[in-house]
Image: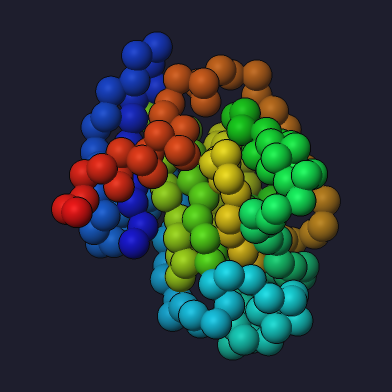
Length: 197
């Protein structure tokens, strides 16, 4: 289930909205030209698979997005915990790559096959924290200021769409707003604590 939390972007951020209603999330994100759609989840792939398996399983949905938006490059990004000694450093490095606010010269379009991550969208004096999980397709227009947090124990598989393979390079803004907003681990822990046991 997707969750949206909207914060002020002030020195002491306040929570303006917190919802798991897909209708409310879709309507709120539409105000900043961001789209959320949902696809049926293929349970056998939520823990990962090869790029060929994943793109093959979602062939029709991927083809529809490519036809609608003109994307020419589609791939699969995934990161899953393992027991190797290198894992903690690999996870830390992957997470830190996009933790600071940045923009891209291309749309950022991700479909979560499995796992989760939070896209933080900074627009109009607010930060929209969109917790994406399996089945969520988020379309963020190019040049939207944002950052992404996959948590301290990243575990996700996502299909990515690009107009070209250089569009994903981040142009960092230098704004420290990301350090003031609750991170992935904090939001997920708070969400779990609020649910009945």
